[in-house]
Length: 172
Image (cartoon, one colour):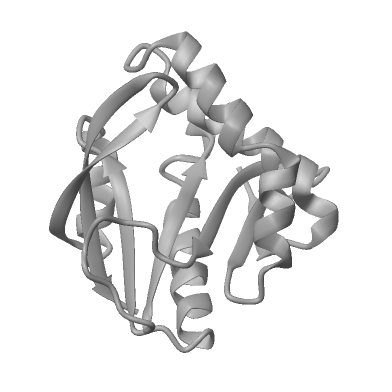
């Protein structure tokens, strides 16, 4: 599969919402409660949520599209940190980075990470933080391969259920 990564624009809010819901469902179906997944996506992956991030000059959003037809296959979002650890004005949170499973192993995740790190540096940030579900071993391996190290934990609400997450960090 071939794909391209580009900076998202306000016109991409609906496509980002679609890929966010699809990739979250694909990642967590069978691991998390289905009703919790639906509630979480409705509250946190709507076009309006993406429109807010896209309008924020201190956020950066990337979209990955299939080379043929430009269907969305992945995305990454950087925002101001919202994590229960000490942060500084030089920190930024990689709020989301997801790809469809059919793109895994193609280098898309690494390309999105590289673009996100470039965006973090362009915004003047020196440290990138992220939270990841404690039970997502594949994601842990990916982040550690990308140079992230665990710096804390948090509880993260998905629907009505709290989950234990790990907080990772690395230099931008």
